[in-house]
Length: 279
Image (cartoon, rainbow, N blue to C red; front, side, top):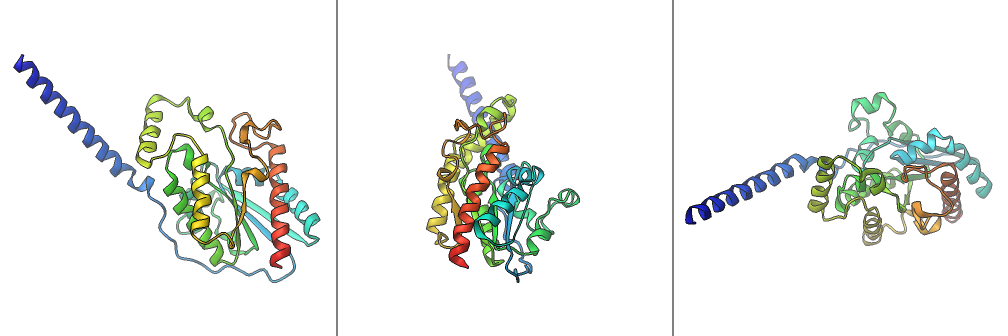
């Protein structure tokens, strides 16, 4: 009996040791993945010199599909109708980009060569200058369970750069999207990795709501409320993918044409009202 007990004890100690070793290896492996971006060196950005209202949109697939679906023209028309001014609107984004990657895409030197070759680098567009820059980021952070600290620190870097460049950041709060429905069927190994990251970062799996909540708190706590234009989800899509208006594609993540039309109308109204006050 004592011999069996000793064997079980040794086996338990070995399992514990292996678990600790595995946890340490995961921490080492994910140290870069879970760490926020380092601040990049700034660059010169042109200042708008005429009466044309210039609006940019940057970010992940929401920004990329806005450009691909020719929504820039629609947003431009909405803004011209509301402001009575000539407007230039332009969007660029890379599908799958997390907040750190969006920040890196804003700089030539930090953009991976493959992304530069595909035209994803945002620096050439940003250098032209603008009055407003709409930021679409965060869904991919939540999908990868990277945590609110990662998201907020990277988003703060994006905001700081835009403010230094003379642009008003337009922060679009993430509505509810069905990440669980899209990614919940991952292979068990991949889903286990997502679960471990959620444990390490202290966030629920595939839940965008906590990310939105922490970003809103960051803006208030950092004294940025008067410097950014915040568009809350209640202003256009309080129910997210559950909205009876059917604003999403079948994946439950990306907007359809009707969804972009509603979002752009809200963005145009918010920007036009802010433009009237600031100018």
